Length: 478
Image 1: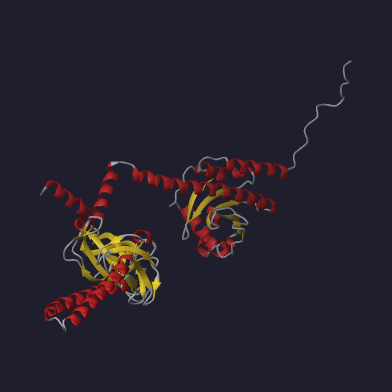
Image 2 (image 1 turned 180 degrees about the vertical axis):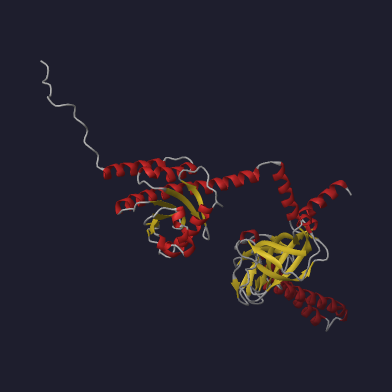
């Protein structure tokens, strides 16, 4: 069974409200603006297709550089003549309105983002100066709107000028304001891309191996090599005591005990080192017994000599033996007393390791440690022979401490070694001693770092290639 046919004609779709049509056009224009891949395409859309939303006679895109206005694009034109009379008049007119009505307004920012990317101004002939008012009717229609657009930094850098013969009502202005806000957001994206492209282009052109870049690079390197610099050289450096008291072995023997730790502060009379005294104790007792025996023999001989004159010759021999044994006993007691080495003054003990000394056989005069005043230190720089330069003593040496890599101290020269001597590691170095000023805290004795000494002025090329030249000359025997 077929459905009944309607007696009426075909049903027509309902008419669309003009305001709804404008809203759909607004959404379409903003979507098209966001999808443009080139800034020029977006600018063309702004000045030509905005007509689909709000009809106008002229639509112009302008740019503000902080001092003057330039016309970027205009409706119906492929290219704008910046020096044409219309462009000159309109640029002067927009600059006047910006200075009077747009720029003085305080920017409104919330959470670091501008509240709106646009500022709208209704322009009338009354806003013109005398010179601009005479040419108003010649170049533009009766009613005009100026939209100033902000960039991502909340600064007015561009805008749109729209004019037509009929007035702009509130709805027209509201639709245009929303559309311009979308345009401004889309243009800010291209500003970011343009800045990134400029940076990439700069580095790409800088590192490209074209002939012009090679010549520029060679010229830059040549000029850098001619920069005047002070000749300088670095070498290992250490904080050492200025006048340390040497603690040495008093006699041949074995170190039994180290009573202090490295870097410990001691007072005068404190025990530092104890030597093994077993042999000295035995020798002292033996020498005392031998002396007593010699004295007994001497006394007996002296009594016998009273009755036997032949005994007188033995008395002098026995007296010599008594004196010898007494001297040996006294010497043994003195050595025994020196088996405990005590501090001769206040200071800090300086040595490497307790375990390296305990139980070590030592010979007379061998150094065990140093006793130094912590406030009386100096800088010792060990400058290798091949790195030696003519040092300018008027320029202080610089010390970079390993414990404080971000700081440095200056030190004035006190002594520069005349002859190179061998270090414990076998390296031949010149010893340079320098003193710190007394203003700041003194670095701790034993700290190490890098010392830098300076010579006379020269060019950078010589300062860089001096060492390679010395090595090359040594290899070639020139």
